[in-house]
Length: 169
View 1 (cartoon, rainbow, N blue to C red):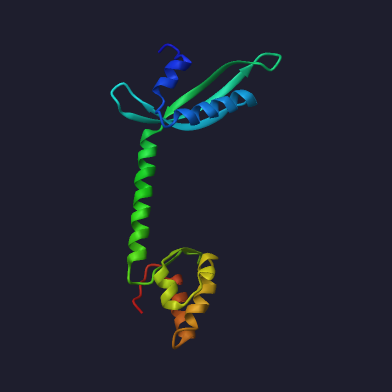
View 2: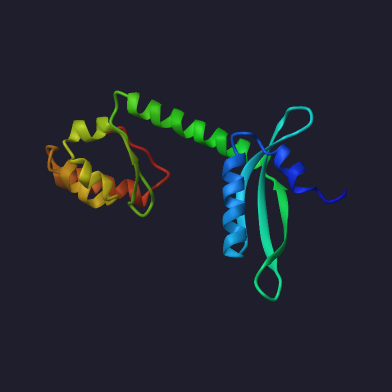
């Protein structure tokens, strides 16, 4: 395909992205260095494509910009997948917060991955303790609220040692 002119390229950039792309291009030329940016293109049929552009400024011996070269990669499928993942995470977080149950998600190394406000409320665990990500701190706070804290801690330790097992204690 023949090389696109600057005006042809700008005409395809989504109107909401033109200013950011123009500003980025100006920074690249003034800094005389390469860059990468994501933006949208409007195709002839009106569909939107997401692209990642890598550009590089070539300068003459005196440091004056001569040309810009680069590549444009279609990342539409990646952007669609990212948007679906963001939506799924929003939905999951909303469901988790709406649950009447206290939820604490901990990985195999006992790092807290997630929790809901209901968990903090039920067990009176300060948010600062949950935010540290240290399950042992939280376990000790929760254990201090149960009838037999040693038995409770032993059960939690057992479940960590036997990840295939579950409990409804």
